[in-house]
Length: 420
Image 1 (spheres, rainbow, N blue to C red):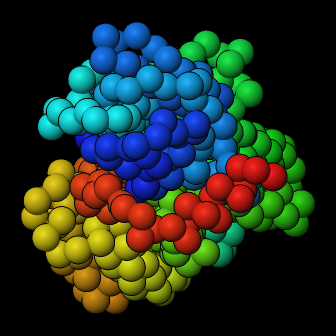
Image 2 (cartoon, rainbow, N blue to C red):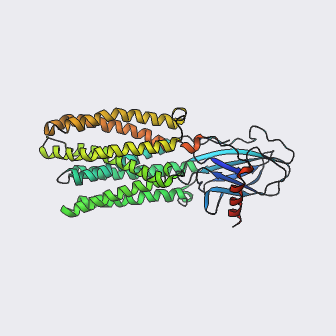
Image 3 (cartoon, rainbow, N blue to C red):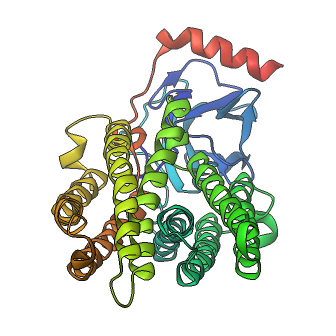
């Protein structure tokens, strides 16, 4: 039995429901994601509910998704294994139980001790994810637009880049606090976990990007452009770090899905973040230079739009795993909602690109209104995306099925790993 969360049981020894002639000396569990050993717990209870073994999980050497717990000599009877994991990848909490019997005992169909339910999506975490994505967009979108779309760097857009960096840092802090609350530990404990290390990989380049933005504000000429270029590179690096600690890193195709996730967020930032920056840069009276800037943005945004669609399709297929999950899971419903909103925003983008951009100066005023609608719809889409990061992906959709001794080859290799 497992809770509807991320780090779920893929295999256990003893298996769920097994009746053993001889008492085991160790419990081995393979999870779908690597649990953080400092935050995850495992305990074995007897029929009376007394703990016979328990403590932190010990990961197998070279197998971070596999953990074990040594057992004392067990008498005949039914035993319940209760576990609580905090994913080392994304910080999501999962709980579950399974039972096995020793001797001539029958394992009851319902576990003796029910595990507490997994925590629901945290409003703080969802808000933080939204802020992190919004900050990424303003950071990278504003930087590239100021560097390449406008002939001269706009201080208004540069200010927007700085605001984006601040929003991203606040979002990262909220995500970290939500992860700490879900793990139910204090900050001193949390800072020593793999989750905190993952957030450091995101925060450090964001802090450096903030320094680069400040330098760009204070400098002039070529030095300002260099500083802003460094800011753009650091924002892309922060997005890559974010991809490494996302759902994309949890599956067997992580080597492919991490770049896909990264490119998806990059493309969104270039398109929607860049559009927000363009709206700031073309304030006031329409001019030829502003119309040219819009034209330059439109060319790059077209490629970003295509990249976002393609990478989003790949990521959606990977995370859903099956077509039925699209209609039978909350994760799938949110993807449908996100897709529906995206289909709504597409005609607006097409209208701008194929009509108002071609009108030049006279098209700037209507373009502002349509682009404002694009940005507003994108903000709503980002809410769905933020919720998606808190929900289980395809590894969680399939119910755990106990394995039998046909998995002897896996058990033999795992046992060898424990003996090292």
